Image (spheres, rainbow, N blue to C red):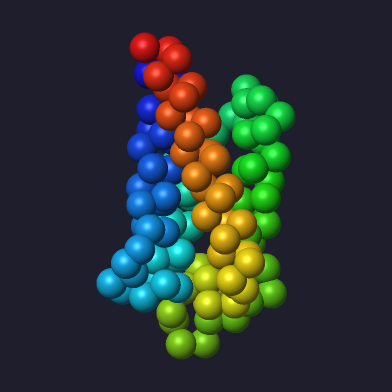
Length: 111
């Protein structure tokens, strides 16, 4: 059952990014950030292959909220999501999809 939790959370993150966005695009991205954070918390990345580590490093950069302020208590990931360009949103979606696929494949390989 290796990586089953990560596979589940990344699948949820991927789903949050799919159309339509009934709560708004930025809120959907913030929700995907939350799922990724929960699913990857305390993950031993040294056990992953180079591709997965590279995607995680890119995801970390997308999720980084350093330097952002939240004066209206919207949530830093909401604010970060609002700053992403269309190109960045596309890259983020691809990275989450790749990670979801990778963790799902690793999980199923262990069954």
